[in-house]
View 1 (cartoon, rainbow over the protein chains, first blue to last red):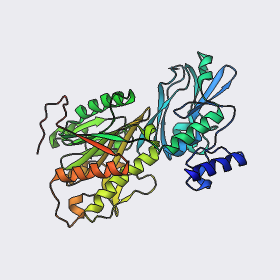
View 2: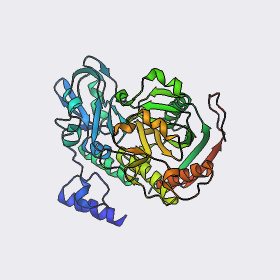
View 3: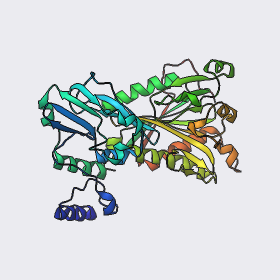
Length: 161
Length: 235
């Protein structure tokens, strides 16, 4: 407990987001959390730019999944609903559902991921993006977490182990 | 610090694959709604080949139409992993647990499933280890003794692990097991010089290893749980 508090206060002093178990080696600790994105409790991120929202999974998520070897994504033109699954990834012989943080119409899908699923691990916020959506209820974005909230959420989730 | 963790274990004997799948789907839904605690199904299947989400049926080496002749079924599933075989004398565990509540990701969860089988093997003096990168599972040297294939939906697990106590290994000749060529499949019977107790004892040991590794303080046993199946438990 004391070590966790020390690590948190050290992280705060260094202004670093610490989103993992602090009692592991600190160099292993930090998942990247980007400002300006919104986050769901199921570890997906949303980047809202104009009329389009891009969705992917976070650095914390890809780290906890392990090496992604397969990605299943929907077709463009389909729709997604907040909290419902839209696809899946496979890593370490486990398929994990990916859930959409918002509702809307799918306007683009990252087809590169079928050939290079590992981009989700190496570039979760950029080349590893999964779908682009036209949000049908923009107010849904407000109920998602900001970067600070999500960082704290990850810390608490990892600490419960 | 999390509170006390309860595991409910269903000892089910022989269960047809599809019946087990339907049961898991129901339990996943119940667990997601917190109607049930973390639940562990312990069972065996009649001879059954299964494929994962990637549908790697090029790894089935005989025509699907011939499977009936060898007394086996084939099922496509949503789990991770490649093709595998399940059959009598193979201990199967299907944990239906909430990974979010215990703070585990897929990678850590699978590692703990590997550890469960590694620990069980060590009870019989068998030195098993986790696979190299990309070869999830449990190995004794170059021979595979335990397989894993998991599905995680809204943080709830289904499918799980299969540990070879003494299955009929010739069934594995009809597939490229787990998509890995040139590696043998083995069993506890083959690897240990220790006398094996009854399979029921080994199943209970496997369950205990699981419960201990996952930190369950309370284990509740449910004998002869009801399931929609015509199959009777075979002793």
